Amino acid sequence: MRRRIVSRGAQHGASLVELMIGLTIGLVVVGAVLVVYLGARSAYRSGDSLARVQEGGRFAIGFIAQEVRMGGFMGCRARNLSIAEGSLTNSTSPVVTYAGPLDAVRGFEDGVGWVNPTLATATPIARAAGDVLTIRRAGGATVGIASNLDTVGRAVTVRHNGIRLANGDIAVLGNCQGALLFRVTNHPSPTAYGNFPTVLELKSSGAGPAGVEGNDTTVPLPPIFTVGSRAEVMRFTETTFFIGQNPTGRRGLYRFAAGAIEELVEDVEDMDIVYGVDTTLPDLDGVVDEYRPADAITDWGRVVSVRISLLVVGAENNVTTNVQTYAFRDTDGDGLPDLQTAPDRRLRHVYSTTISLRNRVL
Picture 1: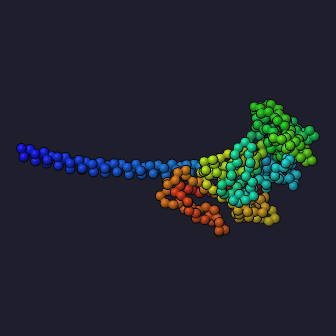
Picture 2: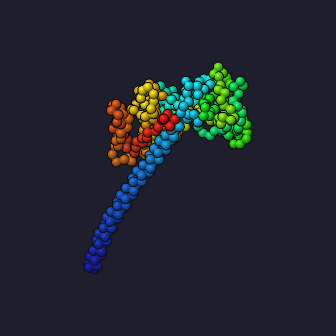
Picture 3: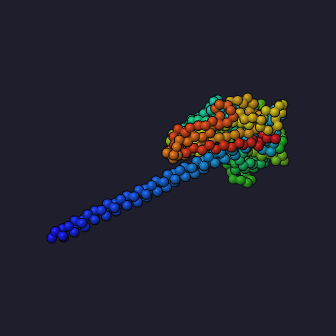
C-alpha cells in the first residue's frame, strides 16, 4: 500500500513539474508572439503615417506649383500685357487689382496685411499659422466670340457658355493684341459646348448679390476684339493659399477662390514662402538675384519665382521613437532654414520646391 501511495505522489510531482515547464514555455511563446505583433503594429503605423505624409506633401506642393506657374496668364499676350502700355484694359468696378503679369503674385509674411475672407454661405476659416500666398490669372476652358465687342452697348456674344460664366464672375477677353478684364453683369444661362450663342454684358451695374457691382463705363473699351481676331473669353481667378484650422482642430492647407473656401490637404501644419527677386537695374532680365521674405519686398513686379516649404505631419501621435527635429523657416536671416524641435511624437516632413512664374521669366 505504501509503495502505491509513493508511486502516485511521484506521479503527481512529475505532473506538476511538467505543468510548470509547459506554462513557462507557453508564456515564452506568447511573449515572443506579442513582441512580434507589437513590432509589426508599430512598423505598420509608422509606414502608414509616412505614406500619408508623403501623399499629402506631394499633392499639396503639386497643387500650389501648378497655380504659381500659371500666375499672370491672360492668354496669347500674357507676358507683355500692361495697363501702362495700353495692351491691358481693366474695366472692373469695384476694381479687381490687376495691371498685368507683374501684378500676378502677392505674399503676406506670417499673414500680416492679409484679411481673412468672410463667407455668406460658410463659416470663416481662420489662418492658423504660416505665410499666405495669392495668385491672379486667367485659366480653364476658353470660348471664342460670335460677334465683335460692342463698345457702345457694352456686351459681347460668345459661341456658347459651356464654361459656366455667371453673374458677378470676372472674365478676360483676350487675343494676341491685348486683353480686357471685365465683370459679367447679366445672368447668362449655362449651355453645352457647341453653337449656343450667349450674350455677356459688361455694364456699370447688375452684378453681385445687390446688383451694385459692375464695370467702370468711363474706361474706354478697346475695339480690337473682333470675330476675325481670334479673341477668346476665359475665367479670371484670384486664388489664395493659407494654413487654416478645420472644425476638428487640425491644421490643413486651404484654398480661397471664387468666393468659396475649401481644405485641400489635411495635416499641413505650416507654410513658409520666400520669393526670388530680380534686382537687375534698370530693366528686368528674368534671373533671380536673391530670395526674400514677403515683408522685405517693395516691388512685387520684380518677383520671378516662388520657393515654398510645407511642414506636413502624420495624423497619429507616438509614431516616432524619439522627439523629431527638422529644418524649417529662416528666422535668423542667414539664408538657411533653422532647426526646429517637434512638440510631440507625430511624424513630420518638410517638402520644398521652387517654381518659376512662366509669364514673368523672359
